[in-house]
Amino acid sequence: MKRQIIRIDEDKCNGCGLCVPSCAEGSLQIVNGKARLIADNLCDGLGACLGECPQGALMIEEREAEAFDEQAVHAHLQKAKKTEPAACACPGTMARTLASRKGDAAPVPEQGEADSELGQWPVKLKLVNPAAAYFKNAELLVAADCVPFAFANFHQNLLRGHALVISCPKLDETVPAVEKLAEIIRVNDLKGITVVHMEVPCCTGLISVVREAIRRSGVNVPFTAIRISLEGKIIERKQLDF
Image (tube, rainbow, N blue to C red; front, side):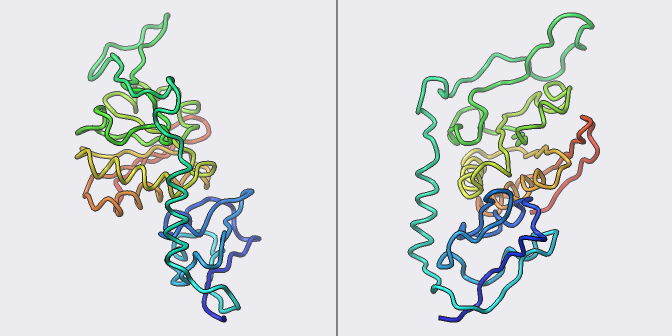
C-alpha cells in the first residue's frame, strides 16, 4: 500500500539521536552512527520526530510501505524491555547504599585522596532498580558516561547529595532508557533532575531522553541541564521545560 512514512536523509544525519526518544513506537534507532527506520510497520507516519532533528534530516514522504501495525509496535516495545539486563543478574549489580559523605564538606587537601560522593551502587541506568531506596525523594543526577572523565570536580561539584544514573545516548538503547527513567520518576517523588552531558552533538540526546521520560511519567519535576566542554569546564547551566 502507498502511505505516508518517515524518510531519513543520511547525508544530513549526524547520529545525534535527538529524534529517537520522540518516537513513541520505537521505530527509530541509531545504527552505525546514523538514524534508521528499523521497520516500516512500526512507523505511524505522523512525524512526531520531525521537530527534534537539528539537521533537517527527517521528512515525511509518500511511498509503498507495509501498513502501520499497533500489535507489532506493542511486541517491539515489550521485547525492548525484556532485553534489558536484570538488576540482579550478577552479584556486582546488587543495589546498595554507600556511606559516602553528604552535604557540605571540607576542601580537598592538596595531598592525599579526595572522598567519594557516590552514595549508591549500581549506577548504570540499565542496571538500577527503579524502586531502590536511594531514589526515594532524591535529587537525581543523570550523567552521560563521559562526563566524569572530562569534568575533574564531578564528585564535589555535581554528584554530592544526588542519586546517580549514567547512560550514553549514542550507544544505549533509547526506548528502554526512556522507560526506565520514566519509572524512576513515577514512583519516587523526586525533588529534581539534573542532566549533565558533553558538548558534542550526540550527547545532547540525553536531554531528549529525560524530557520524554518526564512526559511519560506524568510527574511534574524540576529539570536542569548542564553542558560540559571537552576541556572539562561547565559552559552552560539552564532550567528546561518538558
